[in-house]
Length: 224
Image (cartoon, rainbow, N blue to C red; front, side, top):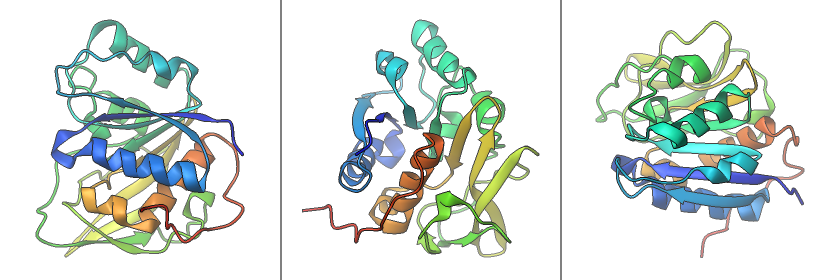
């Protein structure tokens, strides 16, 4: 059993991030297992302590344009710039309104809006890619709009592409500058009911924390 402490930060209200991260937490604690703590913002202007990340082995970030400033923003910036493990979900490319540089500086991303949501996104492997994060992750249909992120930084590794109609965009990638960072632009509410998406995030955490791939796969029946 791993003794890794994972902090999940919720603050993306458009995507019901609290409910989604509860699903992720429950999945991880059954399948990884990892010790998880959930920090929840109740609004973009909520004054929340992020002190738990000081002792975290990894952070899962799922927030959108929070107005956090001062000590708590500096705490998160220090966490990232010190090269500590980070998994960024969906709107985390614009997690903090007062640190939009996070996307390019830490994630290696290039968020530039999104396409319409009327066409389902098919998630596909990047050509020729082999990576432990993709262990037993099969192509699947994702929900919500496809984010524009092209071009990513040169020092990123694209793992998965999303295809929506005529549009192809990277939807999962790694960036290793000061430390290990995984980003996915997926994260619609319904994605958290896709076992392949949950496996993707689990594998990303295992990679980010350098604890190796899962010894075996389970059927994902962690829900009541």
